[in-house]
Image (cartoon, rainbow, N blue to C red; front, side):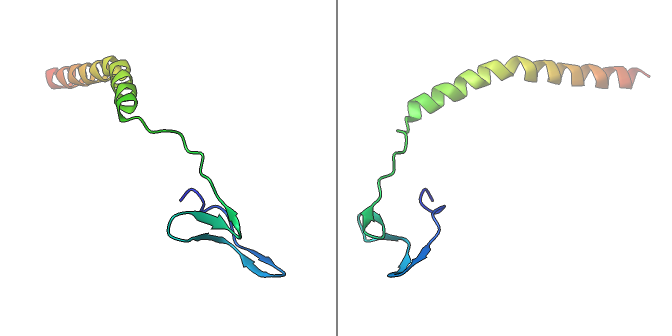
Length: 76
């Protein structure tokens, strides 16, 4: 997926495209290195927890407002 945005190129020597030989990716004869960031599941969990804590009051207010609207509609 990371290298899929590279389109094949037609050259004098044939088609130059990304290939995988079993242990590495190559573009023509050049070895490709992916500089992807490290994935830390604990840090991802922490970010999700902080986002939940930030959005929880909004969800509670919206839920309370919905209950009040339904209460007022039932009193009519």
